[in-house]
Image: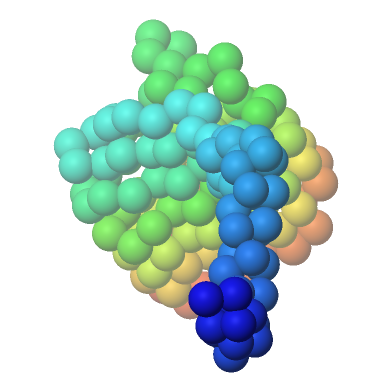
Length: 178
């Protein structure tokens, strides 16, 4: 019996080594504390999100990117009514407006002083009054090819604005737009 056991162990030596290695790996992994938050730490957290306007949503992530999506017009804002991210303007570093949105509402990004970039889709036809007013870090913007109007004071006090491309489609530029 002893001889048969020795012979069996010699013949299955590779299998035994393989199983031993797998067992060691399982033990080491169980001793390590794998936390799911460690795996997900590079994912962006949403700071604020919601609906504003009919069919228009927004999402602000912790890296400062505000994304506007949906279809239709953005709501207008002003002294009586603030945008839903009121109080978070300093956290906004970039704005991405997705295709389907047809305008940039009045006062919607007013005072976003740390915003450096804006992406506007070709579906935008006008920029509302004071939409980007007081966005003092905004450096450049390309107006979409279908835009018709840039309303009064749309980019007032955008002191870092160094370039703007205005397409031939623009029919109206309001007072003090830039």
